[in-house]
Amino acid sequence: MLQYTTFDTPLWELILVGTEQGITNLHIMTDQTKRQFEIDPSWKRNDSLFDKAKTQLLEYFAGKRKEFTLNLIPQGTDFQKKVWSALGKIPYGEVRTYKDIAIATGNSNSSRAVGMANSKNPIPIIVPCHRVIGSNGKLTGFALGLKAKEHLLNIEKGK
Image 1 (cartoon, one colour):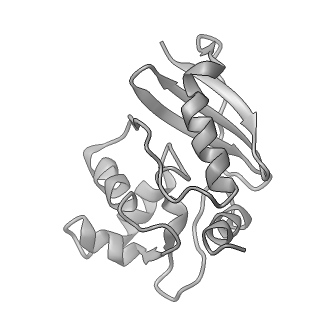
Image 2 (spheres, rainbow, N blue to C red):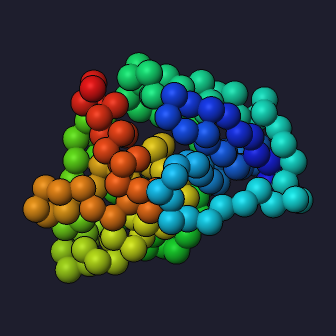
């Protein structure tokens, strides 16, 4: 059975969803989000299950945490999981292009597919899809809004 919690960060309210085995979803309640996300009535609220994740996320927002040590169980296709794995290897404070991620997944011509997989990332922040930018160096395509992407990158730059 899926369980969830909600909590406030300095920027937004977050919703975490998962099981005893790990986190399946993280939703950021931004004013620019293009994602629809609702808490399913069958889910059970369990704040204590997510204590470690909440602590680590709040440390991240405070600029004190550079990597997460949480069990993640994102649901997606094999290709999406390959992309999300590559995202997890982007160092804190650095960015990569969609093309870089395409190359890292073994198909340099899959930049557009990488962008689609990136947009479906169910665990943003922890799986750092915000660290992917356009080949021209501009912030592009963040399902939770470009302002949110900019905020996250600024946290990692110490701003």
